[in-house]
Length: 65
Image 1 (cartoon, rainbow, N blue to C red):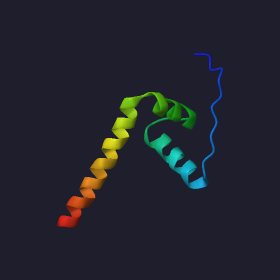
Image 2: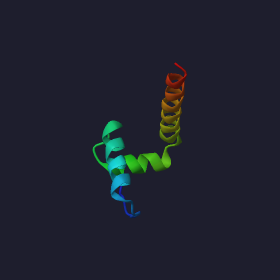
Image 3: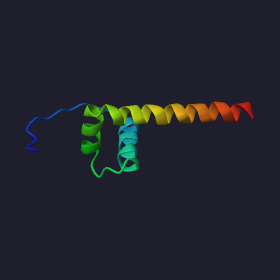
Image 4: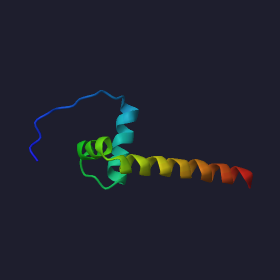
């Protein structure tokens, strides 16, 4: 696919590190590929939300013990 449009936005150092960490954790080599996929693929976003909810639930369950 011929990419002809540029999309830019600014983030701080902390947020950029999070993007880089998620990029590698999800198996992407380039963060631009990861962000592109994240922006257009609802299932990837939903997967991330579910993972976050599972972490929250796990922490709550640990707190009950």
